[in-house]
Length: 219
Image 1 (cartoon, rainbow, N blue to C red):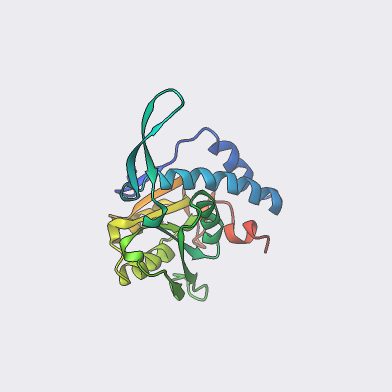
Image 2 (tube, rainbow, N blue to C red):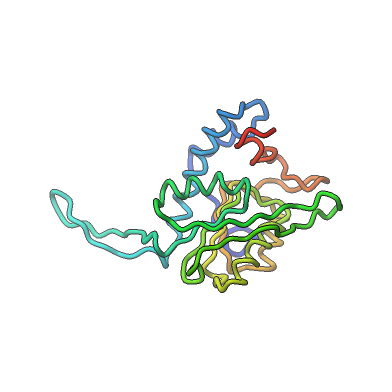
């Protein structure tokens, strides 16, 4: 729980400090950034998947020695949706953990020509039956919250219940959390870090730069 959002989980994992040190360092080369970012996002993806109660069921298996009561995830009850382009990096980690999961794509970009930099929707392709699934919305960075809000709006428009959306995020900030919390408090957020805030250009501080550019080596 965070003072900035009513429905958030902030990861606690001993490996995160080392991984964040690597990906935040501006001198980390693209190949190394991708390597450490994938490790970080895999942890994030695992924790996000573990928080999908409607896609999880109890089961009993047998070890060589005894009975074991556990649980299993039904991939058919999940849809992973990326906010293109940076979200594709996190989507890849989710797909690696959930082979065969259905996928949706939403392209949203900030309008850099005005100071407010509002989010604009350019493309939305979602699979049939998504309204009956739990949706993992993937985007590594949550800055102003405009892009995430626009993506959530697109999901709601096709019938996805707000309570079925879980937003998986690497780095966020108070401004974006408060904005999303005011609009969609039922959307659960799973994040690896809450940073200090936004600078005058509306970039996350300390942040790590442009995630998509660094991950896909288009700097």
